[in-house]
Amino acid sequence: MLFAIKTYSFRKEERLKSRKLIETLFREGKAFSVFPYRVVYLPVKELPVNKFPVQVGFSVSSRRFPNATDRNRIKRLSREAWRLRKQELYDHLHAESRRMAVFLIYTDKKIQDFTTLQDKISVILGKLINI
Image 1 (cartoon, rainbow, N blue to C red):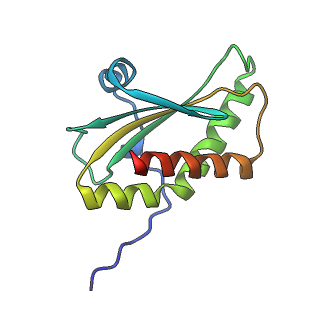
Image 2: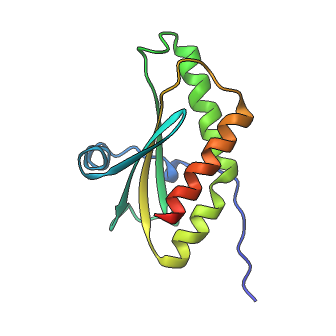
């Protein structure tokens, strides 16, 4: 019997860093909003070869948060919420042999608490699964 191993990590291979892929994502991708995030996603035929079906990036506006410490805190909280909740989406994409690139843009004007961000990430993952 095969058991799925839950990994609560967020490795380098899961991060969206390819400039070419990011440009394609914003040019051809689709988007939806779940306050306080704007989500841009793109089903991808070829991600760099790795075992992770999703590459994700996070962004916070320097216009809304001029202090780098605030931007870094929001990104850190967002990455942590993603890390803890991503497994359901990963299992769904593995079952269908699909890959996806996702970019989360924080749009609120104040820093939300971690539990709120976790709930919103869960809603986002549910929408990505339905798509």
